[in-house]
Image (tube, rainbow, N blue to C red; front, side):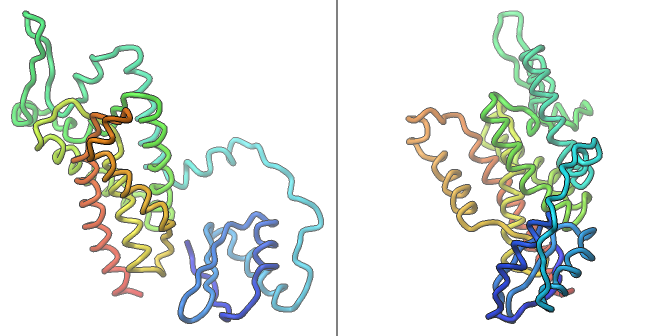
Length: 284
């Protein structure tokens, strides 16, 4: 988000905010020590916001004469994808892998698991090692388990949080930052899970928890960076992570959760968030 103006603490900005939404100008207002800070989501709407702001300050009418026409062009549908290409590409890859698993089954899992998998002549599972995979050039296995999902609910929830947090990172800090978080957190989460002796696991949830930790620390330590995450969402996701570590989760049907991947991803996200929020504070 982009900081536009600081309004007096006692200013009644309700009419202004209603007008901004009526003109489809996405924004947010935060309460800070020096007053009410007005933030803009899309920088291309800055001139339109400033015009409304000046009219509001003069006491002029703010509401549009008629609702803006609905837009259904292909460019409008692709707009969000263009603003967050790394998040969109990751989401698409996960969907393609999920669809391919429905067709090819265990062959996809064997190709993308963190270690090579196979079947012996006697029918038992043959499990390779990470050292063997790396020495044979199968470096993709460090990250590829993140793209595996084992059910619709697993896929939907992971993609929802990936899009929610990833789009925010790309809009505010660019696609390179999002790609860095994806690679470091994905590999870190997979290695954390593998360290427990597990080889059959997958999902983007480790990256999701990394994004949660990153966005939360950026919003807390560098509030002028524009990052925002509701505190109740932080409490819910951390509470869910703790819940899945208990025996109660298995009793209600949530067994076989990659808890170490969640924790590993969260640690990576907090470390990256601490570093980059510290740099943001130095330059603010």
